Every structure is written in C-alpha cells, then in structure tokens.
Length: 445
Image (tube, rainbow, N blue to C red):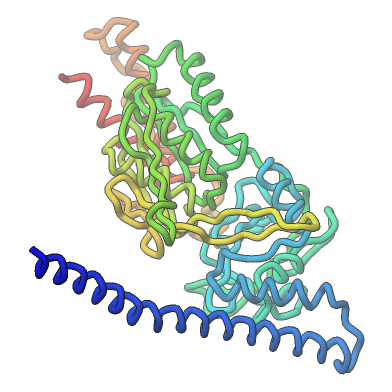
C-alpha cells in the first residue's frame, strides 16, 4: 500500500515537473510577443515624431494618426475602415434612408474603385452606371492608390454640382466619361406594385425602412386585389440591392418563413457565433415566391435569397450575386468617430458561406442588352396586323356568350401587357411567367 502511495505521489510530482517544463517556454513565447508589440509601438511613436518634426511641410498630428488607424484597418479587408466623425454621421444618415451623393454603392478591388450597384432612381442609375463598372478618375484625377473612403469623398460634393467620372466597363474597348449632377439621395427602400395577378416587391436597399415598408406595400397590393386569393404569387426583386442592415435582412426573410434557421454568423471564436431562427407567420400566406438577383445583389440581399432558397420557399432567378458574405460591426469611438470592423462570416441555413462565391440562381436568366436604335424606322410604331375580325362583313362568333368573349378579351389584354413587359424587363417577365405556371399547377391539385 505504501509503495502504491509513493508511486502515486511520484506520478503527481512528475506531472508538476512536466507541466512546468511545458508552460515555461509558452510563457516565454508570450512574453516575447508582448515585448515585440511594445517595440513596434515604440517604432511607431519614433516615426510619428520624426514626421512631425522633420517633414518638408507642417502636418496636422491628428491627420497622421487618423491615416495610421485607417491604414491598419483597410489592410485587413476591403470592408474594414475608420470613420471620421464626419463620415460616421454620413453613415448614420444613409441607414436612415437619406444622404447626399451620386447614388452608388462601391467597393475596392485590387486598388480600383468598383461599383457594387447603382441605386434605383438616383443620378448614377439615370446616367447609366452599371454594377461591375470600375471608376478610375474623378474630374480627371486618378483614384488609383487612394483609400476607398478618400475616393468616395472625392465623389461627394454640394447638391446640384456636376462631376465627371471615368468608367472602365467589361466589353467596352475604351474607358469613357460620364457626367453626373450630384443630388440628395432619398432612398425609397421598397416599391410595391401588381403586374397582372402578381405582387412585385422591389427592394432597393436594407435600411431601417425596409421591412415595415415591404409589409405595408404587400398589404396594400393584397387589399387592392380584393384579397390574397386573387394574388398568384410574389416577386421579391433584389437586383442591384447592395445590402445594408443585417436585422432588416433577417426580418424580411422571417416574413416569409414559418420556422427554421435564417442565418448564422461565426466569428474567430466559436462562442461568438450566433444563429437566428424564423418565427411563425407568413405575410404571403403560403403563396409561391420568386426572388430576382444579379451581380449587384450583395450582403443582406444574399442573406434573404440564400435563406428562402435553402428552405425551398422561393425559386431564385437571375444571375450570380456579388458574394459578400462577411459581417461588419460599427463600433463607436471617442470623439464621435467609429470603426467598421469585419467580425464574422455569415452562413445560409444549409451551412454554406456566400463569401466570394455568391448565391447561384436556381434558373439562370440574363437580362438581354439594350440594342441601340440607329435606324429611324426602328422608332416608328409597328403597323398593326389585320385579322379576320377586321374584315368588312366578317361573321360573328356565335358559339360564345358575351361574358365568355369578354373574358377572352381580358385574357388577351393581359397577355399583351406581359409581352410588353418582356421588352421592358425580361427578367421580371420571366419571374412572373414562372409564378403563373406554379399557380396553374396548384389550381389543378
């Protein structure tokens, strides 16, 4: 028994010695790392003092520190940055739905400013700026090498002032200039209308207005149609929607899901992860949904499209989305500034990350390019085709009642309007045709 106790004690002592032997080098490594960090901070302080004392021109120390902070953040990824008090105030205005500018969402790619998407009804959209365009110059001054926030600042200016931007576009042989007049950007987060028997909800951004305006718009369309039974489905149009507030993306997804996961976020530490589930209730009362996306659909738009797609609640139509699958947290700093830091990646309910890959549509439908009208006769209205009914003295159709003939004429008018929509917006027309098919299948059950 004494031998056993002695062996146990010896084992314990050996364990203590082994632990000390392992912990010693680890503690030394941590101490060395801390020392290196302090040495580098001392180096930063030395450089700062030398610039302030010896640079060829006098510089503002505050500007130097801001530039250093911003450089540290922007070196991490394209979406992390420092927001000066002025920029932080502008960001708060934007999330409320009103700000001044051109009306484009931009990012930075290999040092170039890239358009994520133009915003509906803004000067940039009306000037023909497209998702995927690269902006290389502003008023003849190159943007190459500038931080993204500095490039954005160059594009800002007084409302009513004119700006000339140089654009490089895929498929165009040469860069070209676009003149835009700056304006106050009033973001209409949601536009609702009914096309035939389909409710179309156009979501242009995800700000504080998005979910309440979407709910209000859908309810108005249902009421105007005389009830949900007269609606064959919903098109959720998120093309060129650059995203915005995560909580609004969750609310919009939850509006059409009764249960299940909407999105999960995972940070560097597992305990920092979060998972959001849907709550009971469906604004569409089970009606089929088609989601429209394209290369300008990013961030919050991709959360909604991915959630509805994974739950097979909607058919996603269009082209591959932008692929921004990271979450930025805005952290207030002293002096009214803020820090925008990438803190997590988000994942769709099936566990896929959209980062750099985007959401792939169930049905790929590209918007045909607009053909330039070069011939004068192309602008002339087409001559209407004559039919049997147009012939003088033609016989009447005596096999149908007046009500049946009226119904045929109404259906024909709907078909004519659908054909017009294909010329105006092919992707939306395709989405509405899909819903008609789904509605027809449902009515045969």
